[in-house]
Length: 462
Image (tube, helix red, strand yellow):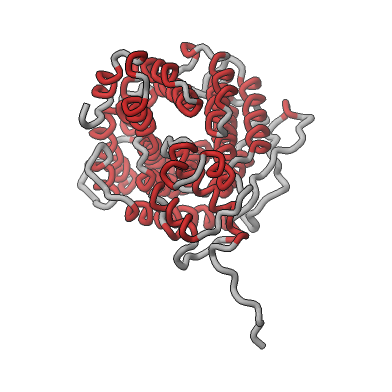
């Protein structure tokens, strides 16, 4: 007998908070303030904040379509067209346990798990997440016009099988290390030429590897794709970040290094967060934390564990989950304390300064701009170990001041970012948007050199 209950519409109130999280994820990934988005959709910054946090239900179809248009969000993400739902994959952010025995090992909750089954089942789920990544890439790619840019060569490599000569694993490892060094030094201008050839060579080397070298070759291929995904995030190219992170995860699962697998999960989780799925991203990050054995206090394990927690804390913050963000960043700080003065080969930027840097980012994305600046003042920029992270520090400080309505301080931070990492201001779309806003409405007399700065960032018409 057919039930008389009518199906619930996709835009019902039950989905309202999820819709707000999508809006918040899209807004923050594009470096837009609440006021900027509010002006474009016809609401105050406070009302947009209420929608994002689920305080006000975001269910009106007309308003949803307005947010989708303003933020280039595919309509499907709001359920405005039929889309497959994965209720099993949507889970509240997993909390960190009470941790009286913090010094003895991994303290992320091992009991509240949304996945079930054996290790093979977990891998299938992650591959499904990768498939969802490709679907998300296709949807986002159709939502905006693609133009040739620094990522064009990478996109070509993903869809072609260009001929390449395999190299030794040692030679491939050296090439990947060199490219990663360029990324950490914020020499982004080298990567558009380097990365396509690197991936093509890594793929050829993996394809030709014998059985004794296959796992190592797959791990190196994963490393190359992880680097490509990180660069795509710098370019604000979410479809490319989805695709390269998916390839990284598949290669890492065929490899033999648990830390590379953890890093690939981080890349996938970052793509999930940037396209409006912060809860699923946190679940993936926490699961990756559980799989790292930090009981022996190895520097690489502790640094990867702490890095995943930093990213989880920021991801929770983008969803407005202050409690989870605080728990994850507290656990990351504990890992940094345990790491001490040691440096990790895998994650050299992790440590006390790296945790503080994330505290700045977390406060800024939550709209706590004064708190963000307080954290920033505790940190000596010279103590940040890589130029890429120093540039990120100053950009986050600029974003906090921009959101706070302090144009002079925002501009000073942007100039500092250029000194620390010139490519960070040339390549980062959030920097371009802040600069455009300063040109449009900033007090010109108190911002000397702004037009010249804008020209150096590559803004058109300057």
